Image (cartoon, rainbow, N blue to C red; front, top):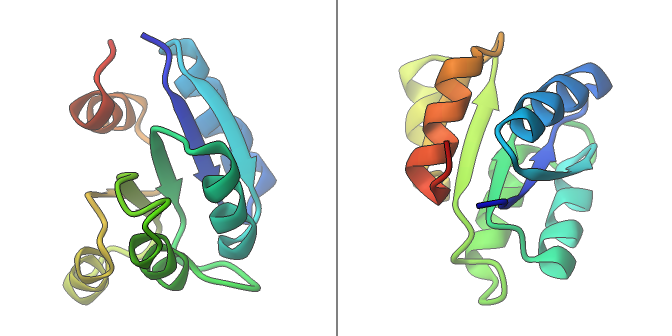
Length: 123
């Protein structure tokens, strides 16, 4: 079943690669290049899942997720953090912000597919 997944990352290459993988799994993808635009897209589109980078200009992923979780319109949307930061402190900060998962860059197609499937179903 096709789900709409919002990918929020400041790297055009990462957005393209993650979109391509998720589309191969049968999902619809939408992209945003920073947390502010990601928040705005989430309010408008009501995606089934958000994949969020942590370090971005304008508004980072932690701040954007805190804002999403504080807004009744978007609080229910699960967020998977996707970042090159992988320390225990980073993971705890992501959990505290309301993250439902944490994936490390570089991307692993199988891990991404499993994390998405665990949260929204699908292949």
